Each structure stands twice: as structure tokens, then as C-alpha cells.
Image 1 (spheres, rainbow, N blue to C red):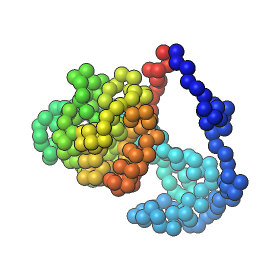
Image 2 (image 1 turned 45 degrees about the vertical axis):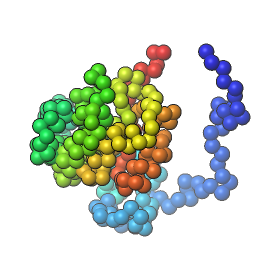
Image 3 (image 1 turned 90 degrees about the vertical axis):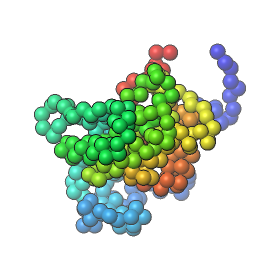
Image 4 (image 1 turned 30 degrees about the horizontal axis):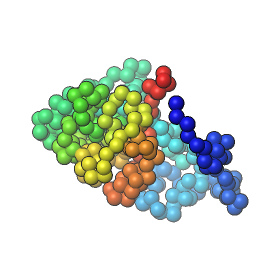
Length: 282
């Protein structure tokens, strides 16, 4: 066991003092909510994210309705006041999991693995696969698929090698583009995962990845760059690992500096989910 000297900041953190509310912080009840402005979700189609009409649209919902729109893996709830339907998303690189609009059988079409498909070097085949998966998502009333596998084959024993494309960052970049474009052409977000550095499956919930910036940009990030910058992807699923000592979803450099500021991404960047952690047994 290691002994670590407790700093004042650490003592404050452990005592539960995570946040001090400013004296002039507005209360949720002071924000306009539940005010009918006559705007429905369809009226907002095509508006830029900084259009002032969005503030009017959002003010029509109550706090509870706004909270219901925080995205998660299965989608978001409906909001009757603004005619917003519920949404769902499908998970799977080689086939869309999830129930059909009717019945209780989670059947789906299964496609050849990424390794086999990319080995054809046929961009038309890759795009067609994206189109077909997009069509199937529409049939299932889904708005997104946690689909294209964007990480690397760093070892032949990688637990996700069947979902990821290859060990070559540039080749992965080129393969991700047509499939993402095909799916996006159907109006379904093709979410590239796992962003980024999911280099192993064993203990992936928190494993530390160490590298230099040049390597990460030229190798690990290339598939995601292709899917976002060229493929037009509107969604990403993050990795559960750490970049150095920083948890992926908490990395400002990754999720803001690179993704949104450099690549211009304006979609959903969502954390991965886990049914249980491999840490718990230790």
C-alpha cells in the first residue's frame, strides 16, 4: 500500500465540498419554462444552433421535460408540448441490436465483419453497407447507430478486433468515410466508436493509455477524423479508458479542442455504457 499526503484540496474534496454556489447564481425557477410560444420541434429544422429562436423553443418545456432530453444509449423521451417524439438508437458494428417496432424479438440483419469488408478495398461496398444499415435503422424508428468501429488492431488478441478495421490509421480513415456517408445519407447518425484509444478490451473501464501527441493524432484519431470531417458523422461514442491520467469523457483537449474546435463537430459526443466493471473484483 502507498501513503499519500493529503492536501487541503484533497481534504475538501473528500469532505463533500465539491462545489460552492455563487451568491448571484440564478435558481432554476427564475428561468422561463412551460411558456407556450407556438413553436414545435419541426419548426426548428435547419436553424443554426445559435439562433435566438432556440431559447424560445426551450422555454416552452418544464425543467422535468428538459431533463428527460438528456441523451442516453437507448434514446430520449417524447415531449408532447412541442410535438417531439421519442427517439431510439441501435448498437452494433455488424448488425443493429434492439427490438423491432412490433413484437419482442431483437432480430437484425448481420453483416460481414469490418476486417473482411475493408479487405475488399471497395468503397462502393462500404458505402452500400452504410446505406443498408441506415435503412434498417429507419425501419426500426432509430435516429442513430453506434456503428463504425474506429480503434486499432494493436495486438492479434484484441477483444474488439472483429469490430475495428485494421492496424493502420490511414487505411481506417479511408474506410470510415464511405460507410459513414452511406448511413448519414439516410438521415441516420453513424456514430463512430470508441473515441478514442480503446486499445484493449480487458479492463477497458479505466485502463491508462500513454502516448505522445503526434502518434495519437496520426494513428488513433484518424478513423474518427475521417468519420467526422469527411463522413459527416453527427454522433460519437466515447471510450471508457484514460488518456494518460485523464478519463476520456473528461478530456477537454480531446472532446473540445480537437473534436469541436479543430474538426468542427456539432453532434452528440456520448459516453459508453457498461453493465459491470472489471474493477469490482479487485
